[in-house]
Image (tube, rainbow, N blue to C red; front, side, top):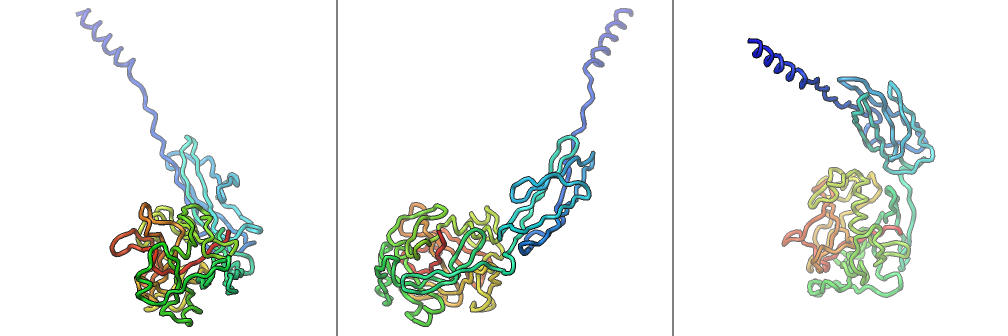
Length: 350
């Protein structure tokens, strides 16, 4: 009996020695920027009130740190307000981010984007002139300067002529490496309103493909300007509101970025845009293998970037009266864009 009791005692002591108290798992805090609203627009010099809320269900918030455009501004204390004086800030898109920390080191964050416009003016604009003496309005969108009109030059910047091809049969027989331009329906009136339509070879003026940002391809553009690469179009689209995953996808992408680029009139069936970017895209149509199509309905722009491993195709951007986003299409029997199609050209400043 004594032996049994002793063994039982040893067993109980052993079990007791292995027990331990588990530390509760910390719940991360929560935080949210309540002001300003995401996508809000402010003029330079405005004092913007940044407000946030934060809570921790199993403890307390020990710190909220504010960042503007990736730079740490500092800690903000309850009730989590900060006044940002935007005097001297650049016009364009800015990020506001907060990171909340609890007493156990748990983290949470929230981030929004807002837009600051140039003081006294919605847009920052300028003028550029081509070899022929045509002047084009230009517009700063984010950190890029774009032509706000379609190119219509008949010469490269060195004075050499671009071949004019009017015949449908002759255009249909163009090799993808041939330089050519035309006006929609061979009409000078359309040239005034919508610019010219160029083959990719004309737009590139003999240069090879570029995916760089900036592209480094002057091509058909005036001196100190160049043909935008696919990466530069993506930068524009992201500035106008697309996420990177949207901008890096194919098909119709984004929400209203196309509308922000389209003019407020000229598009059929109520397909007009808001032109809030100042890009001022008109529905110039295109020339396929001979015929003209799409005037009033669509606008297509060349990039300096060739389709991957397919030398007769190149990337472009498409705007349509039927869509508020921006089109970027794969090669296929329907969506392929051979280099001997005629598209519009927009140049971007070096």
